[in-house]
Length: 140
Image 1 (cartoon, rainbow, N blue to C red):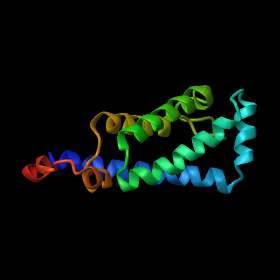
Image 2: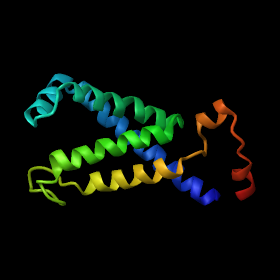
Image 3: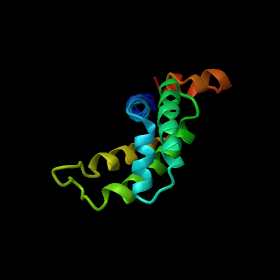
Image 4: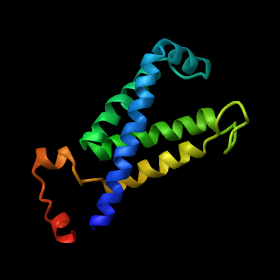
């Protein structure tokens, strides 16, 4: 059980950092550029704000271990949307100018795994909601 939680912790922190950075870059690079890009693909521009906020706040929440299953589910939706709307036509490994969807699939798989299983190790949610962590202590 402890090995499972340690693995989930590593995936949670990694995804948290990656998505936080992606959200931060969207705002630093000018969110209006992202809005225009979304609109050029036929998506409503406001979705750019939603995606960037979910990535930024969700990434931070994962690092802290708050609302992890909800955040992972939102990340899974984002990754499915990105793959279907943007990357699928480019191909699995890309076209030389743009990366394919191989990384998107890996991130999606990690998000789905953690949406199903959660990640309790060193989680602020465990501390705040005082859930019994005796399972982890027994497994260690």
